[in-house]
Length: 466
Image (spheres, rainbow, N blue to C red):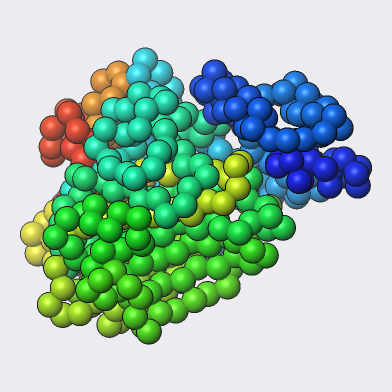
């Protein structure tokens, strides 16, 4: 199926006879997709040739993400075969890999079981991000209806919750915006030590016509979370920018002052080898880690910033803002799996002294025992503790939330515990005779299963000293 981005792009594509292939990845609300396309088409003044281009587009309406060309697909297939030969499973439902999908454990009524899988840790060997110990805010938009703006958010613009074929869960879709903020009203405190994570997909980002393609993540100190809502920030704090505009991809980090303006404390990093049109449809995982004045920022396995003095000592961070600028009609961003956690894990003390260590930082593919590579630093910390205490034996116990069938959750929790054991043995050289495994499924919840935060805290792995 041929695909054309804007009226200008249509003209150039048709004149130059350049064919671009698009992926069969579709938003699962075709009615609203058709309505948006029809409205865009009605508002454009185009000639008969360009109109014929739209007719071709409508033959496959809803297919919105670009497909990699034949060579790229062959390379991906070869890489996937190599991973399989190495005993590694690819991510379920998403050939693009990338993000930490923190959705439910078992789809309702599914009962599907998967064998423990070896995670692809190689590229994460220098990844030192350790998620906070206790999840205090979690957002996967599961409580919101498709087509609605999420109930727990505020904005001066618009967005809608969608599902995407081939991707897990629900996503908040942002389209053409100018100085638009999206504020999670349920996040009211950002303490001295916290981690913030989320998944990001962009689509239709084309450098030749990209004036503004940016997402800001700002944490700041303000009297009202929606103060100066058309601005990047409304008080002291810091802002991270994911930028794919005007011929180069880059990320930047900056400090803000009392009025929300930028100070001269700022950094920038070119990433056009990663943030570019070839990665339309890829899941990026963004992680941020605050320790008092210090802020680290990660894009997938890369640590892109580590500023030790970006926050003043007396700051009280109490607001989070996502701010977007998308200049073209077809520009899109999708956000999901937002996770705010607090407290630094103390693996050695809790496991050796207290006899038990519990973590939500080891995460898995949805309905799978396949460990996500973003879990590397947590597993490494546990492995080092076991190496330093060679006589200690542990039992690994898996836990799930209550979504899905109880029997399936029990089986899945056991497989996940076994998968953790196998990774500690194969990746970090821990003697398997020192480790036993078990799983309790949903039978021993750490929190109520009625909220996203409660479910996130119930999806955990427990290490008990024997």
